[in-house]
Each structure stands twice: as C-alpha cells, then as structure tokens.
Amino acid sequence: MNAIVIDGKSVAARLRAAVGAEVARLPYQPGLAVVIVGEDPASQVYVRNKEKAALAAGIAGRTIRLPATTSEAELLAVVRGLNADPAVDGILVQLPLPAPLRAQPIIDAIDPAKDVDGLHPVNAGRLANGLPGLVACTPSGVMKLLAEAGATLRGARAIVLGRSVLVGRPVAALLTNADATVTIVHSRTRDLQAECRRADIVIAAIGRPEMIRGDWIGPGAVVIDVGINRIADGSLVGDVAFAEASAVAGAITPVPGGVGPMTIACLLENTVIAAKARRV
Ligand code: NDP
Image (cartoon, rainbow, N blue to C red; front, side):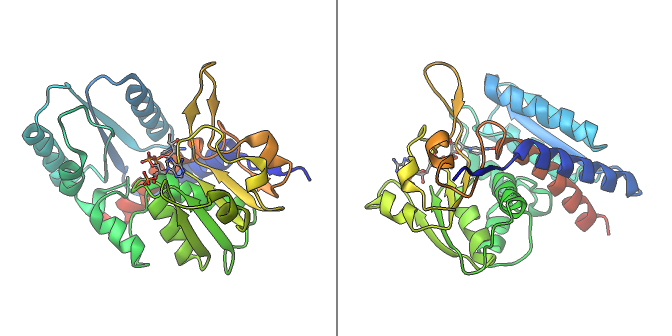
C-alpha cells in the first residue's frame, strides 16, 4: 500500500484564505499582538512569519520586541497593557522565553478571551472539560488534517505519542471530545510499539527523529506527524520514518509540509474567533 500524503501546505493556504475572506466581511479589523523577548533566531523567524501571515489575512498584526534583559514584572506589564487595549483581540507571547523568565506566570496573566495560543489554564481546562474555548493552534491543526484525510474518529482507536501541554495533552482532549478511544503514551510507557500498532489514528509529538518505524504502524492507519527535528545533515525530519510508514499507513503527513504550516493558519483563525467573541 502507498499512503495518501496529506498536504498541510494546501490545507493551510485554504484556511488562511478563508480567514482572510471572513476578516473582509467584519465591520472592524481584528488585532493580533505578538510579544517576543530576546534574540533567539528560530523564534525571530516564527514571529516574522506570524506577522506576515496576519497582515496578508487583513489582521492588524503588531509585534512587540523586548530585550532579553526584560524582567518578569516588565513583561507582565506589557501583557496587562495588551489585555486592556480594545484594538487587540489576540495576544501571543512567543515561547520559549529566555532564562530566567518563567513562561507560566506570563501565560496566566493573558486575558483568556485573548489567549489565541490556547495555553491559558482556563482555555486548557475548558478543552479538557469538553467546553468551547480557544484551542491551542498546533492541536487544532492536527484535527483539521485528520478531517482532510477523511479519518473516522468516532470509536476509532487513537494513540497520542507525547503528553506535553503544548501538543500531546490538548490533542488527546480533542480526540476524546470527538469520540475516539485515546491512549496517551510517553517516555515511561512500556512497549510503545505494540500500543502504536493497534491504533487507527497515530499522532506523533515526541521530538525524536524518525523513532516511529514502519512496523509500528497498523495497516491503513492515519498518521499525523507533529515532530520537527533537525538532523546532522541539516534537513528536517519528523518523529515518524516517513518512507517506511507510508508503505503501511492509509494516509500520512510529511515533514516539512504537514502540521507545520497549519499552526500559523490556526493562529489567524483563533484571532478571528476571539475578535468575534469579544466584539459582540
Ligand atoms: P516536549 O518535549 O514538550 O514533549 C515531548 C513528549 O514526548 C513528552 O511527553 C515526552 O515524555 C515524550 N517522549 C520523549 N521521548 C520519548 C520516547 N523516547 N518515547 C516516548 N515518549 C517520549 O515536546 P512538544 O510536545 O513541545 O513537541 C513535540 C514535537 O513536536 C517536537 O519535535 C516539536 O518540535 C514539534 N512541534 C511542532 C509544532 C508544529 O507546528 N508542527 C508545534 C509544536 C511542537 P515525558 O512526558 O515522559 O517526558
């Protein structure tokens, strides 16, 4: 069998266009503020891409660049200022923050109604309880790719590899809310391979280059590879050994070009969702 390759780039482009069309219909311009602290080059690229994508969708994108020496109190003051700014619908603080800044107190300070990253405990808790709220962008992108692949979730056996707050946990909650039977595995799990082989849906988010081999995948399974790992030759690979897994799976996302492009598109979607909820 040769798996269908799920084209995240084109799904993301469609979503960005749909968000742009929706923005054009709104009687106001939604605003997204991205805060970046320090000079981490990867974060700088992510933030520039977010700003560009926001502007292309007609969202007022604003980036607030702060020096690495910013104190927690100063960063909290910036977040509170954005919470109070009526032109700002979405606030994203780019993670990771440079040491010694701690992420959690900053995330906790963001108004949950403007938390377009979906990481505030109120939004994470709403998701866990099956209530509506702002959903973290990468997990939301994963669900859209499953829909694109035509995966049946109700009653399906789904495995989520990884239990991070950013990916594994929210993906598991979304799949549970969609009536899948979900197993979450992590670094302490026994016999990962056997758990994986039983699954109809495999979501890989462990950050280990190509650890999930072809013989870990059940025939016809839908595989979504969240992992982004840079290997010795400088190229990017996922957590799944793509060539081996595509010989067995029914559908699979590539890396790059799978989940990656969905994250920013879902951020734009969240900004519009937040704007519409706030500006009723
Ligand atoms: P974390 O490092 O926060 O979490 C990794 C999870 O994988 C942990 O739960 C860890 O278990 C588990 N794990 C690590 N090694 C193993 C192993 N050998 N066997 C089983 N489980 C293991 O990573 P993130 O969730 O933030 O990211 C995961 C991957 O997704 C990374 O490659 C990251 O780059 C990528 N990513 C991609 C995004 C995108 O836009 N496409 C966005 C966010 C992340 P334990 O809890 O026991 O330590």
